[in-house]
Image: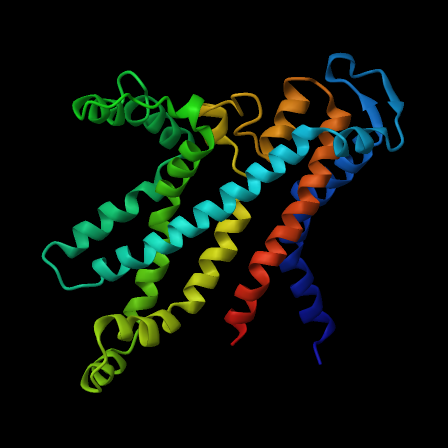
Length: 290
């Protein structure tokens, strides 16, 4: 039913978004596919030879790829569990009519707006440093041996660092949902003799299901591409203990200068990211449609 004029206006309005998508998504993906079939070293950019499927064969037989994949999945699932399990209690607490509630909300949400690099540096030098960090001082005060987190438990340290930054995001989403909860439902449950725990499981938690779906969808997308925190703190080590797929691409391309293999890893990472996002997000998306 649209006229030719309205169709033209619609195309003009969509043009900036389409052009941006082509420039920043489609064209880089095409070049990544192209480079994945080449022997292409950044140290000799002029010498490019056709490699066929050799880069993919090398990548799929490299144990480092599967270690990075396992680390990526462990990081995503661990942080999702922490942020959801921790965000709901924090949101419930911040939703209570306590003195200074607005100030408490601002302080609780503030870490999410800290840049990832700054966040990683604060944890690396001020909190988790085995010599001068706060946790080291607490351990020495209690007569315990300080833990060198980035050497002995690098993946656990990354989970703590990243979860600390994403916990406020989950808290904010859950808090927003709680403010739309009809108080009459909770009051009716209380009049029917329901305990606070029963009220939470049968009234509050079902109301938060869509918010949980949103948190899962958004966090999964961003957590699969974690890079800054790894680069600043562990450098992917020791060995490959804290290397995820994103950092493996960086290592292959800009440390080993093998752009062909790095492109093959990047395509594998895109495939895995879509599979993981689909597996985690499909139930969440279904819940959003209800």
